[in-house]
Image (cartoon, rainbow, N blue to C red; front, side, top):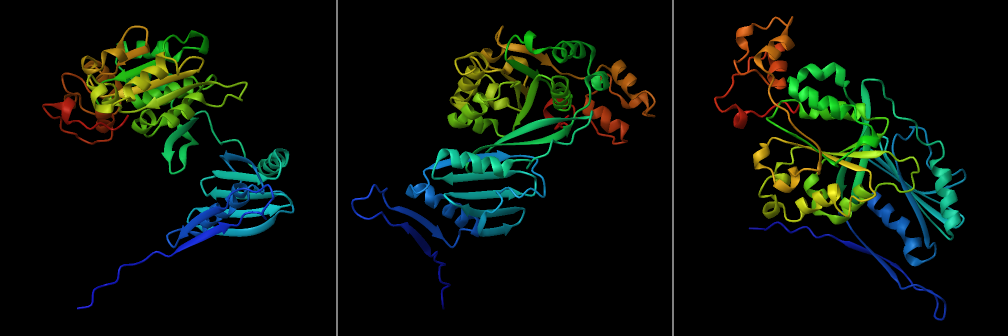
Length: 384
């Protein structure tokens, strides 16, 4: 019986030889490539050669969003060296007198541009020529807001920005029971000069509208605060370099706004046993909101959780730390009937103890969702 042969990966070694003896030369530069690497990977390596060897010791780079489809992202007269296209991405390697340029561009309108050059001034001027008039303002309307999204990528933290739908608070206020609506009134009307406390905590059962309220908050605070959603909060508080990049922000922006970091469903991070289960994550969260890391940083943190307040870590809910602690619960039966008025839903379909926002939306759509006797633990919610 003939056994299948195991596939072997051929490795290509790219070696940059040193200068002649006696010259002011750098050490040899060695790059390893295998047949697992794509053409775009090869171009990444080739773009680093002149910088790694010391031939072009200055480097400048930037990341762009909302890039115009017809933007060349390279100076006039640049010599194309390599072009690689793969699904959703185009990579271009170009060069000129004393400089080398790599551009990675995605169909989503995001681009990464890196320049190495013989002088810092040349690197800066080439980069400026690449990005000049390359982007356009995001298309938004009164019903949307620009929100950033953070995640840890293969080469470090990545932030992308897109417009999301966000109702005004006045339009959705009726989605919340009276005490919750009054508490959210105060939060929605805050200004940057009235911020006291850096942590906003929304807790309660699934489907009660916590995320919907945060979208409205991002819109209400849009003039003075940039909302960013962290997609991997466990990685954020588990990786100091990631946390530093998110917390420090852009110090060069003279007109920088406050930033609201939104962390959804962070039960493990803030519950009572968090110190044991998440290691330093809880400590770093507290340090960001009320510690050395947060000093001088205009950063607010909004957390949603399905946990009961009694199960949360006492350090999270201690007086003075929270901008607000709001339990977002079910609407009463009378409030639910008012919400459904005119929808044609029979009053008998509304439970005696009221309903969550998700249940009301389902009833209005004609989705008769049976309620479990243990609704709080069985419900999955609609991520409202």
